[in-house]
Image 1 (cartoon, helix red, strand yellow):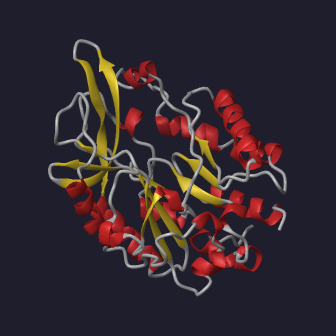
Image 2 (cartoon, rainbow, N blue to C red):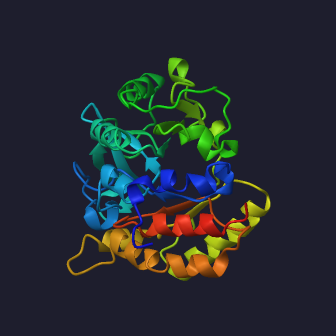
Length: 319
């Protein structure tokens, strides 16, 4: 794949995959996508235990990522991405710890710049909403009014895909989405208590329209993570469901706190680099033309390796 073009890999693959449904192909995904920077962090947060990505979403798009884990938070009255968890800090006690990442407005600009040049499918999954301007022990979820404000910001995306509010995207073919040579952006709202109102079908869709099995292993041990994910893949794909391979290692409380000490702790991104380096060989061992993940979901996307793996899976997949 010496001439591989990650920015247009979906369009370049349409001859092979265009008439396949999304559930019958593999794409690339980014975990905690907006956390390429950490800013306005809490006392226990730093790049070691909070930053999941090195490159912003625009750059991840250029590397071939097409499914993005967007975790919106409100901070100082603005919409950001965020990465927060509730942990117990010695002396301080239980509290929400984390940082803000990219501004949602900046993400919109980056996606618009990409889709203006590349007719690819881009999927944003919204979840883990938190109002960080309210309290610290347990940040509340967005109110409907706060969701409406976020939708207003995301409505500035220029390639939003307008279709039936009941569209089942897992059963949609790639040609039906981008076969016309135009980029499409789909925004999936994961919380099921959110009213999409006038945005429904105008690029914004409930989780029911794109049911993705996404269950991470919740471990920092690579072998346990890999075994967990491939076992889940075999079960879920055997039931003909859409499967996200969560190739992510999760710090435990001790590892989170170790990031506050001097030295060279094992950061989220360093662990991701070690896991990602083994993805190609592990995929080769655990997939067949009929058994493969639908989304390769990773931290720290630093090149087009995952996109090349996805294309290879699609080339070998049974039509």
